[in-house]
Amino acid sequence: MKFDKSFRGYDVAQVDSYVATQQQHFEQVTAAQKQRIFELSDQNEQLKSQLLQYQLDEKAIKESLIESNKLALQLKNDAEKYSRVVLQRAKVFYATWQAYAKTMLNGFTVQEMEQFNQMLKKVEQLMQNYGDTGTQPSQQQPDLANPVQKVEQATQHAIDLTELLKPDQSLEEMCNDLGLL
Image (cartoon, rainbow, N blue to C red; front, side, top):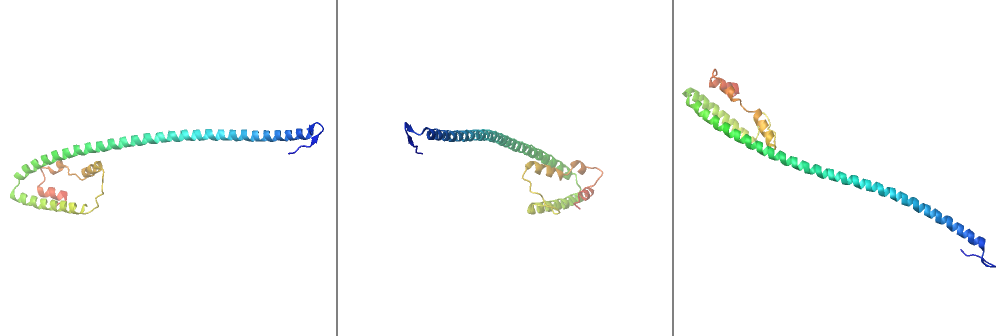
């Protein structure tokens, strides 16, 4: 802006008007800047609280993952221990059953031995069929990767030996009860 020259310098009214206009403009800019500073300050606080929440979430996720890994390792170790115990029990059972079977076979008559051999062939054939296809003849065998589930499933199909040792039943009656004849 250009000011008119007057007797003692510039026109006082024009200068005062200009200064007042500039002061109003300065106050408006200052007020807008203060408002923007307050807005940015609030936004900064919100972002800080969001960052803090994200950091807390990250920490919780890390702790959860660590605990999950520990639990998975513990479950794996427990399953391995359980499978070793079950395998050891199976070995003991097999040895006991084998000794009992030898004792039982020694007491068989020739006719009972022939019936036993027929039953043994059927069982071996069933086992062969089961081993070749991975399925039982009548149903599909689910694929279980978990050793505990495999053991649980095997116990569902186990034969209770006390039922096999009924003195009032003949070998033929036992085989009929088991569905082998």
